[in-house]
Image (cartoon, rainbow over all chains, first blue to last red; front, top):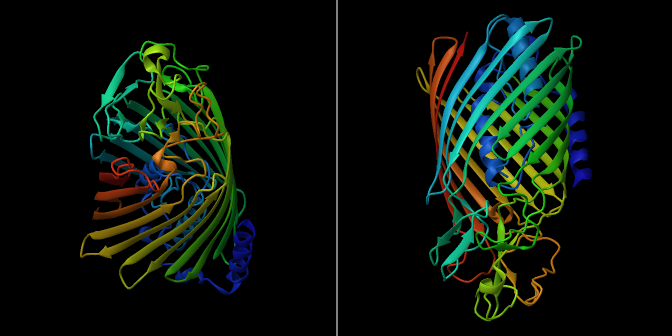
Length: 70
Length: 437
C-alpha cells in the first residue's frame, strides 16, 4: 500500500511540470469558493464530528486537536 | 490585484496542509478575517446532543508572517452506548463512578445517560515566510474537558515550484493526550461490578502519544482546476481503550448474558460480578492515509470533491467520498453536499464474548488478547446529505445556514435478531457569520 502511494505521488509530480497557468490567469483560482477548504468552520466541525463517530482520522493535515470523544 | 491573487494562492497552498486549514486571506494587513459559527448537533433516540460555538480569527502580521487563531466550545449532553448489545432481558449496569446503577429494558440499546461533558479547544498557527517561495507554519492545539486533556504541536514546510503552480509540503505533528476516567481506569477484560462493590480499577489516568508525518503536493491544473494529493503516516502509542465501553459475556446455552446458573464467576449475588467485561484494545496503532482533493470551476458554479483512503494495522480500511456543489444564485448561493463513508471492522471487534470458549466460567479469564464492541470499530457505512445557503453581505462579510442529515448503519455480522447494533441518525444545524474587522 505504501509503495503504491509513493509511486502514485511520484507519477503525479512528474506530470506537474507541464501543468499550470500564467500569473494573469489566476482570477478564478483566487476566488474564495475555489480554495481547497472554502468553509473553514464547516471543515473544522465535520472533522470533529466524524472523528467521534468513525474509526478513521486524518488525510487533510497533521496536528488536529485531540478529544476524549474517540 | 495581482499581489492579492498571489497571496490568496500562497495561502491556499500552505494552509490546506493543516488539519484545520485556514481560509483564504481576504483582509488587508492590519485587518482580521473573522469567522463565527454555532452548531447544533442532535442524535435520535435520546443519544448525544451538542451545542458548539466557534470562532476563527486570522491576520497578516507583516514581514511575510500570518497568524490564525481558533476557539471552540462543545457542550455535550445525552446518552452514549456502553458497548453491551441489546438483549431480550432487562440489563442492569453500574455507572462509571461505581456509586449508582441503571437498568435497560429488554430489546433496548444499552446507553449510559450519565454522559455529560464540556470541552474547550484552542488552536493557533503561525506562518513565517522563509524566502520568496517557501514558508514554515508552526501550530499548536490545546484541548481540555472534564476527563481528557490534549496538547498538540505541528510544523509544516511548504515550497512553491513551477511558477507557483506546484507546491510541495512536508509536515510533522505530535500530540500528547491524557485521560482521567470517572471513577478510575477500569481493569481491562475484568468484569463490571455491582454498584457499591469493589470496582475493578487500576490507577486514575492514562496517556497516549500521537505522531503524524505527511507529504503533500498541490497542483494548479488549469485556470479553473486545482488538485491536491497528501500521503500521511501516523502512529498512536499508549492507552487507546474507551474506558467506559464494555463487552457482554453470553451464555451459549441460553443466548443471554451469563448468570450464576452457568458460571460461578458471574453469580452476581455471591461475587458481585456482572456479565460484562471492560474492553481492551492494542496499545499501538499505525495508519496510512491517502487523501485526494480537486476543486473545479464551471461557468459559474464550483465543484469540490475529495476522496480519502485509510488503512491501519487494526485491520480497519475505509473509503470516504465527499462532494460539494456550489450553485450560484443571483445574489447568494446554494451548496448541496453528499458524503459517503464505509469502513471494515477492527480485527478484535466482537459483538460478544462466549462463556466457555472465550471466557472461563470459573475464573472469568478472557482468552482473547483484545476485545471491543464499540460500534465505531465495527463494519459500518455513513451517509450524509446536506444543504447550505449563503448570502454575501457586501464585499467582506457573509451569512450562511447549513443543515445536514447523517445516517450510520452498523453491520454486526450474524447475530440474533433484536441484538444488532442500532443504526444512528443525527442532524446538524449551523449558522455562520464571517466578516473582516
